[in-house]
Length: 119
Length: 111
Image (tube, rainbow over all chains, first blue to last red):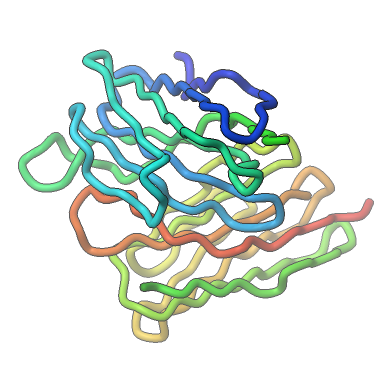
C-alpha cells in the first residue's frame, strides 16, 4: 500500500507568488494535517482537516489556506509568498477522529514533505 | 500554550552505546509522540505514549505524566540510528493533531 504522498517534492518560487502543495493520505485515512518546518526548527502545526472540514488551525496568517477533497486528498495554498515561508511542508494522515468515529489508533503517518524555497 | 523542551540538542555516540534523549513539556497532555527524521526530511513515527512504557526492537520510550517528562532510549546504538529525534505533544481535544513539537535532538552514531 502506498504511504502518504506529497507533491511537488521541491519547488522554487519568488516573493509575491502563490504556491499549491498537494497531499494524498494513506488509503482509508480521513484526517490530514499540515505542518511547516523551518530549517533547524521543529515542525509547527498549520491545519488539520477531517471529512473535508477544518478541525484545527495553527497560528499562521490568512495567506495560508487549505482544503480537503471528497477522496480525502488535501491542498495547502500559500499566497503572497515571503522569504520566511521557505520551509519543508509536511503532511500527515491518521485514520480517524475522536468520539463517535471509528477508533483512532493515534498513529501518525508523514509524507516526505515538499521543500519550498522562496527567492 | 505548551512549551516542549528537548535535551540534548546534539548528541554524538560511539556504536554500541546506550543513548537517552529527554523531552519535557509544560502543560498536561493526552499523548506524546516520538518521531525520527532523516536528512532527506521525511518523518517516521516511532511511538505514541499516553502512559508508562513502550518498546520496539532496540527503542524504548517512557513517559511520566506527573512529572511532564518523557525519555527515548536506544540500546546498542548503530550508525543507522543517526537522525533527528523529535518529540511532539497532543492536547486533550479528541482526535486533534494540533501537535506542539520540540526542536529535535540530532544524534550521530560513529562506527
